[in-house]
Picture 1 (cartoon, rainbow, N blue to C red):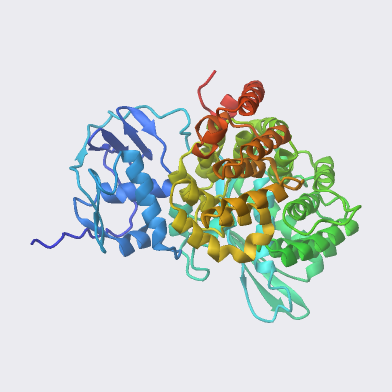
Picture 2 (spheres, rainbow, N blue to C red):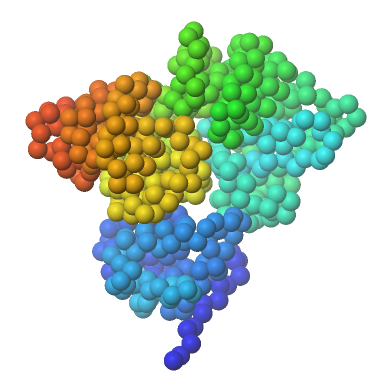
Length: 606
C-alpha cells in the first residue's frame, strides 16, 4: 500500500503576485484567496475566518494528507486549543460543501492522522470571479491599531495590574475616535508577550500600528515607557518615557492619546480628535481605582465583580463626571441583577448608572455597547437596535457597536441583520466576541452556533446546542463539568441536567419552580419554553413563551422551525402567540429600515 503523501507547509512570506491572482476552482466552487471569497455558481457563501483559512490550506495541499497537529499549529500558531476545535471547523466546512463524514467528496478523514482534500483543484481564468456580495465590505479606511499589554517588572507594589488596565484604557479611548479601528486586546494575548514580531502581528490581526509599553518601579513612583510601532515595516513611529506616580496616570493616559492622534491623524482632520472627550477622568485616585476595577472585571465571578463594583462606586463618588466608570458600573450592576445574589433594596439599578454615563457623554461607544443587552433584557431591544444604528451612521469603524447590534437585532427577530452586524464586527476585529452563537441557534444552524460559541469559558449554550442536535451523551458529559456555574443560572442548568438524565418529572418540577423567577431575561424565558415543551408540559411551555414575547424577545423563525416546540404547534395558544410575534417582528423590521439599517450594514433589501 502506498504511503500517504504529506503536504509541507511553506514558510510564511508575503506574496508578491506578478498579476491578478486567479481563483482556485474545485467542483462547482471558486475560491478567491486575495478577495477572501468562496462562491458557488457565482453566489457568495458566508464562511467564518478560521474556516476560510482551513479551506485555503486544504485546496493548496495538492491532495496530500494534512496532519492534525500541523493544521492546528498553522491555524492557531500562538494559542493552545483542543483538537475538538479543528473537528468543529472541519464539520462546519463539510456542511457548507455538502459533505458528510461517511460520504466525503471533498474532505476525507485519514484515521488518527489528519485530512485530505480529495478533488482536483484548478486555477480559473483571471477576471472570472463573481462580484462581491453586498455584505462583504471593503477594508475600512480608518487607521487599524492594536494596544498590547505593557510589560511589567517586579517591585511595582500592587501596581502590576497597570500592565493590563492602562493599555486597555488607552485602547478603549482610541475606540471612541472614528479615525481608528481598534483591535481588541484579546487579539494581543494570542502572541508571545516577550518575543512578538511587529510584521507578524500586522499580518495576523491586520493592523497598521501597534502600541506597546513597559512599566517598572522607579524610586517612590513608577516608570512608564510607550512606543508606537508601524507594523508593516517594524519601525518606531514614536516613543516617550515618563517617571511619575499613580496620581498622574490620567495625565499619562491623555498624553499617549494626544501623541498617537497627532502622529497618525492627517493634518486638517476633525479637531475634535485632539480635544478632551467629555466624561474623561479628572481625579488621579479615581483613575487608579477605575483601572484596578477593569482588571478585576476580566474574571467573571461573584467575588471579583463585587470588588469591581465597590471600586467603581468609590470612583464615581470621587469623580462624578467620569463617564466610562459609570458605564462599567452599570455593567456590574446588571451582572448582579441577573446572576449574583439579589441586590438589597435601594441599590441603584444598571439603567440609572448608564443614564449617568450618557448624560455625561451621549456618544460614548463603551456605554452604547454595554447598554445594548441591558436595554434588550428590559424589553426595549427595538430601541437599542435603533440607537445603535443611529450611532453607527457616524461611527462605522467600531466593532463594539456592531457587536451590540448583533444582540439587539436578534431579540427583535431581525436575524439577517444580526448576522450582518456580526460579519461587520469580525471584519473590523477578527477576534471580537459577539453573541452570534445565539443567532445561529435561532436559525437552527447548530454547527455554526457551536463554532461561534468557541473555546471561551462556557456556561449553558454549548450544552444546549449539543442536546438540541441529538448529542445528549456529549451534552451530559460537558454539563457535569459545570457544577461550579450552576448558581449563575440554577433553573436553566438544573432542568437541562434533569432532561439529559432522562427525568422529565424532575425537569418539569424545576421549570415550574422557575415560573415565578422575575430575573430571567426574555431569551432565557424562550429557552425555558422549549425545554418545557420537549419535556411534554404544554401549558407551562406556552406560559414561558408568552412571557418571553411580552418581555421583548420575538423570533418567528424559531417558532416555525425549532423541533423542541413541535408539541405546541397544534395548540390555540401557540397560534395566538405566533401571530403576536409575527406582528412585533414586522414592526421591528419597519423600525430597522426607517433607522437606515440596510445602509449602515451595507446590505441590499427592501
